[in-house]
Amino acid sequence: MKGNAGMGKYVPGTYTKKRASVESRVGHYVREWESQKRVREREGTAVDAAVDFPPSIAFSRKIGTGALEIADDVGRKLDFRVVDRELVEIIADQAQISEKATAFFDERFPGYVNRTFKYLFGEKAFIDSDYTRHLIGAVTAVAGLESTIFVGRGIHLILPRNRVMAVRCICSDKYRYERVANIMGASISEAKKHLAVLDKEQAAFFKKVFNRKSASPYEFDMVLNLDHFAEPEAAADIVVSAFEKKLAGVR
Image (cartoon, rainbow, N blue to C red; front, top):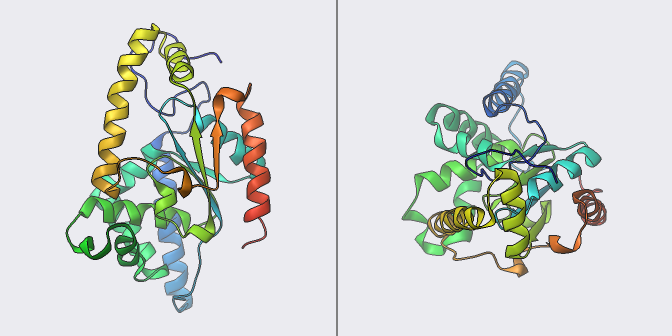
């Protein structure tokens, strides 16, 4: 795989595909939420508390596996939007955008955040944290619009398990080091050091947000070892087939 040679820092989700700016993608969702709200207000549409999520796919991964590349292939095959961790982070972090997301999902999915908190933390749900609530709100607001493919940030733990296909991407450290070194235009030792930092950041995120040390394989419908796939599209084909067996008939 040809990478972005000369790049000084590896950002998870980086590869050769050109993506729309995060700002434009966030703005698109904000406009959709506001448009739906205006339609409901104009038509006097009652809020249906029983409304359910469209079926979605959530990718979890060891950093550096190339899960976003596979997700983009799946999105192209199924005609689903792909949402990466950066977009979800911005919606959760920026107060003005987070408020719009919260208002949208509170109308469509009343009580969902509190139920999800109790699922994740039990009776300690009252302790923390505003960020986790905003994260749940961001994910729910995006997922509530249409079928979506999410990459990273433990999304499979947030969405209803019967509405999401959960996929875990793993690989050997050798595969990760070589892939990231290629993308960074750096040495294997440099890639190894950089991934060690990112791995610690990922572990700290899961501990803070979900109170978990790591992802159990039993949380997922499928675990893909990418050492054994010559091309991302082959892995994407398997995910599409599994999704169609589990959720394609659910609307």
